[in-house]
Length: 445
Image: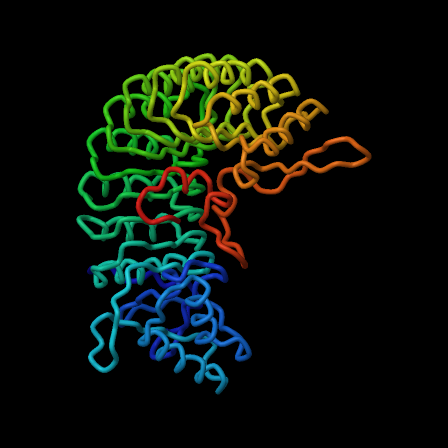
């Protein structure tokens, strides 16, 4: 690639200094055993000598029952020695897959989320993508990458082997989004693209919808929280048209799109024709009980949808009742429903609980943030005691005080660890990321 790395004011030369790249605590083992080719320099904070990168990596492999890569262990041992000597504040970690001196097992993923790579780091990430042809997963979320860095990464993704890219939280804006949309016109390998919280504009959202009418590779896309203006729901109209023609997309995330009842109607009209979408996320929008009329109706005939996230809308009792009637009498494909914070009272919540007694497919429900009364607490306590609702499949847990049943919140809905990784236990199971577990699309995030 002929482009030169951006050089912010005050940038020091990377030279031959060594910079360590490590995955956050609790990340999956493959995120900690990743390759950076020679010349790639990604900067993060140093590990303290007491903890040690080598020990940290070994412990992660043991926790995740993953085989320790001897080459990476050797490199991290050298890094720990450099740190103990109190040398440079940063270290360059070179783990090339073609080293001839140490046995190497080629690696396929890299997680450097939540660092400060900026556009300079994006340049080196792009160089890495050019050289490391075995890379399948790359997580660059929340790295202060802007439109320029987004352009660099998008341009090297033409006909690459990468299958999953997380750009979450990098403000690539509309300009960067347009480069990614153009990339999808050519790329035939990328399966999951996460551009949530990237400040995309209306133009780029429409461009993605247009491109996905032809792209046959993308199975999951996250377009959460674009910067949209106007009240015409133009983006939703285009996405609806795309769903009528696209027969490959499995998961679609449209959180914070300012979707109203007319917008959910557009999506539902498309779902009569779409036979591939299994995970629909329309959380944090402006959908009311009138919009549930369209969704409840399409669920009577749609046999593909398995997960629907309606969190932080306003469907109220009427909307919950519409859904309950369909789930009780018609639909037998939906597995998970989130109605967190929807201003639903006891009547609607109890109605949804009754659906779970007759619909054995409907196994996950998330209800926190609504208006619980005693009947609600008793209903969901009974569901759990009867075995109709497993404790890991909901976000509430019953407890008794002075003979009365109450519900406490125990998780954060469908995507408990979407933005962060737990520091203990397994963070990629049904209870922590139910939506992703129920509808897997390639490698889990």
